[in-house]
Length: 464
Image 1 (tube, helix red, strand yellow):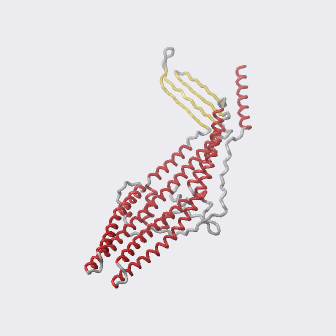
Image 2 (cartoon, rainbow, N blue to C red):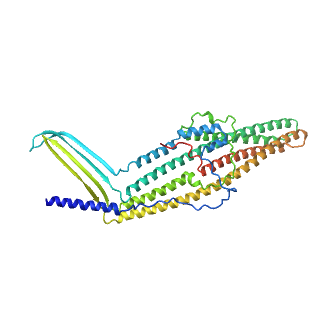
Image 3 (cartoon, rainbow, N blue to C red):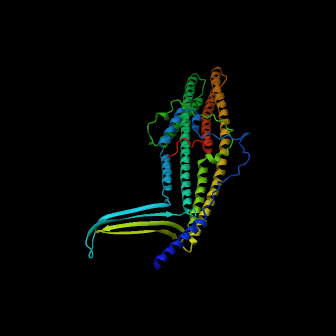
């Protein structure tokens, strides 16, 4: 009886300890406050009025190029890097579900034949059923859950970043491809024009109206143009291979959409004065990665702090055994108090390290916002400059082409020389190439503006 009374007193004392922990304890997890950034009241490229955020939609359709739209659709469904990012989201989601539940139930059943030197063999079986309910008075488990959720958010933001990078790479490669194909067409036109001039000089030389020097110079220009064409053809092939790999295919895959077929360079019509939106914080995947990494680091602090305190669980077990006609029953039910290791210097050091990691994550977020603002500012300035350059280049090409026609007419009347014609042809060739380069830069700057604003990352459905 005395032993039974002692056990009852011990259990009552343990329950009192549990009750005191549940009532007096508090959540020691760190409180997360969403970080803020002191944006300037105005930006250098911001127009009057409030800035306008580009829609998070298919911005590449602004080129009005059906071939590009098709390539983007194929890349979003077939690109291997994007598939890898999707699997990382699935992994993070699965890992978030590995955190144990507060209530766990277990059981075991065995059946067989038992015997030995002192007892006769007999058939029978035994089984056990147990459970454990873990209290979380200091918020350690909840902190682990928040940290796991934060890692899922980071993986999803990285998926958005991978999608945005893919959109940028495919569109830029397509712009480069059309640039080289246009350059190839210009070089072929230049070669035909210079060949016509050379033929004209041969006729004039026969009549004594042109010197050998004029003919040699024209032949050199024809040869020079011929030497430039193979390099342009190689560049076209490189961009075709680049695009096919981005589509998840091996280089050399036949793709008629990547042929020239007379298609010109893609040109955007977006105005340059869209401003710098403060919604940049919500739109750019890299900023969201930094913010959710900070959130995760704060949650990890709470899990480390909870490990400094005792843990309490309530559990029990019932076991049954039946062999040789004899039954045995045992049961257990009661609380379990686990004390942290003493001394707890390493555990405190872990808390301090995680606090420092959280501060680093906050600083990284601030740096990410600064870099984003700079990228948008620079992208808008360069896009505006490219638009002006394209307008000027188009005017230059038009004037030089008009000049070369007038020069050909004047040669027959003695109003111009062969050297004037050669100079005009050279000027037209350079103006055409410069225009194609400016159109290429304009297209690339259009891509950079959208990517720097985080526009388009939501063009594909999230992983379920």
